Amino acid sequence: MKPKVLLYRAIPEQERQRLDEQFDVTCFNSVNDANQDAFLAALADTEGLIGSSLDLPPERLDLAQKLQAASTISVGTDQFDLAYLAKRDIPLMHTPGVLNETTADTLFTLIMCTARRAIELSNMVREGRWTSNIGPAQYGTDVHGKTLGIIGMGRIGYAIAKRGHFGFDMKIQYSNRNRKPDAEQDLNATYMDMETLLKTSDFVCVMTPLTAETEQLIGAKEFAMMKPNAIFINGSRGKVIDEAALVDALSNGTIRAAGLDVFEVEPLSGDSPLCKLDNAVLFPHIGSATTETRLAMVTCAVDNLINAMNGDVSKNCANK
Ligand code: DGY
Image (tube, rainbow, N blue to C red; front, side, top):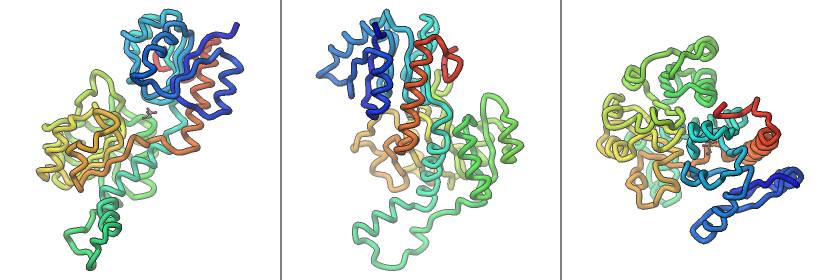
C-alpha cells in the first residue's frame, strides 16, 4: 500500500503525476470554511503533507498523529512551528535555492518602482492626468550609486546585493546574525549593526525570516532612525514590521517611500491605509511568482517529500 499524502494546493499535472506514482494522494486545491472538516479528517489520516499558504500550527498538527514528513512549497517555514515538529521528529522540507534570483528580481523591481515612482506616474498617464511635462513635484530619486542596506543577508539578500553592486554601482551594507565573508569579498559589502544601517542607508531592504526574534523588528523607533529620503523595502514577511508604524512614517514624511511584497495580513484588504498612499508600492506577494520558478519550487518540494518519506533528509530540511 502506498503511503497517504495530503496535498493542500493545486500543482502542475506532471508534478501531481509524480506524487501519484509514489503516494495515495488526497488533494485540496485550497482549504476554506466549506471544506475545513473534510481537510481535518484527511489530516488525521495522512502520513505526508505537501502544499503552501496555509498555517499549520501545533493545534492542527496534533490531529495528524500518523504524520512522518511535511514539505512546504516555499522557502519560508513560518507556517509551521519548527520546535514542535522537531519534538515529534517530523522533518519539515522547504525549497531554498531555486527562488533566490527570481525573488531578488522582484525586490529590485520594488526598489526601481519606488525610487522612480513608476506605478504612481504610470497611473497618471493611464488616467489621462498627463497634461503637461512633468516637473520637480514628480521627479524620482536615483538608484545607481546609492547605499543599499540589507537586513538579513541570506541567499536572497546576497542576490539583491549582487544586483545592486554589479548592476547599479551601489554601496552595499548589511546586518545579519553572523558575518558573510562571501558578500564582503565578492560585493565589497560592509557588516554593521542594524541601527547604523538604518541611519546610513538610502534603501533599507528587509529579507530576514520571520521568527520570534524578528517579529516586529522594524517599528516607529526604527523608521525614525532612517534618513528622511530613505526608501524601505520588505520582501520577507509582513509581521517583521509594524505596519501601522510604517503607514505613519509614510504619511508624515518620516521616510520617502516603501515597496512591499508582504503584509501583516494577506491578502491585503483594499481598505488598508497603505492603499491610499501614493508613496507605497504594493505587490501581492509575488517574490517567486514566475512560471519557471514556481514550477521549480513544486518540483523541488515533490522531490523533498519523496526523499523525506524514504528517510533521506540530507537536503532541504529546515529542522534537522
Ligand atoms: C516563500 O517561498 O517563502 C515565498 O515567500 C512564498 O511564500
